[in-house]
Length: 448
Image (cartoon, rainbow, N blue to C red; front, side, top):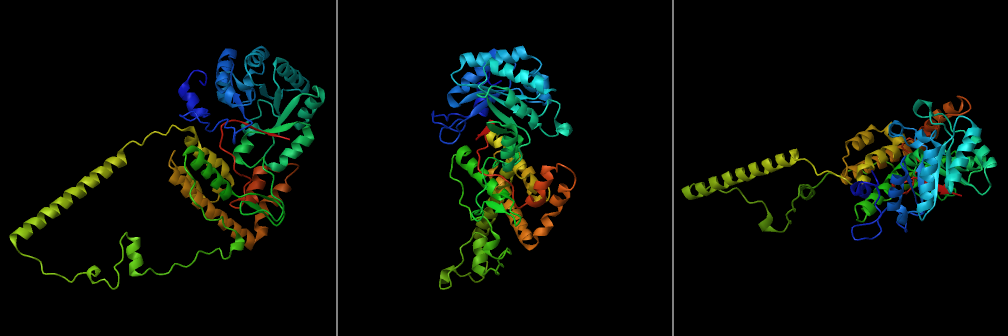
């Protein structure tokens, strides 16, 4: 599709604006280095697709790790791993005909010895870097389980020392990266789903005492980037890079140290303030002409009555026309949104706000009602998120022990606790390890 359809390419890889200026994907000011990943099973088709992006990226990656049903139906991703001949041709054709390096992502096979042979074949075909996901193809859905880092360590020890290898799997938060690098000996870490749920996954936490308003650290020393801070960054990115305008001015994020969490009491509005709320200017106290006129006796002349009747009919016709127009607008089909960045916003936001929406159903419901391109609706979700985080911060300050319950229970269930449960225990509307990363559709890599 990418090779054949200019329309598809324009929607899914936005390297240039209409005037030829650098836009989003591969923009040298904020989106490099960039590897562009493709799934494929036809060497020539893959090469043609890669040539469209090679000017705007630093490498082209072949995805041999996708285990989903769509990959099985299309015979690509992890479902090519029995067809080594095709894989070799795909990689070699890119290596011989592109001006940039070729990389590949693979999954481990049923034995470490077979996995080693597989990795050697991919490197022999011309891959400059291999990324190894420590799960087998069948490990998905309910059978996902944990990635086996010991196989990656075996590959590191058996492959030539100059081989550049990235690790993938079990990367859910910042601290997992150092653990993975130490356990596997890999040169870097690649994150897919972990990065969707936690865009700050590659961002080091600030030093203690320098958290600011975007990062939250609990009394136990654990912390993460706040959900409202992440969503603000996300919305500002959309305003600036997708909508092409300056983000709105925003008040500082709430901190418990700001003072009382209660909203200030609303004073009764004066007549003048009520007039302003209703869209009118209040009369000046010393302006006799602006004071309400005394009741006047109605004229009984036939001319005045005729003019008055005509005015009433004219107002009725105008009101009827307005109602008709409003009704037609209500039933009019909205303009279709085709920008992939706007279409993906709802799914992105549900990923980012996952720990929060399970409790704050108003946020969940508002986000579920958002339509592609309706930025005001997403700004409303941000407002609700800020209120939810404020509520969580106040609750934590009042009783920190209440947020330790689930974490304590999870830690007593065995060798490995469910990391999503641990996150949701104390992060539910308080923190979530996210920060500003453009919502690119390309896979990102973190290098040492």
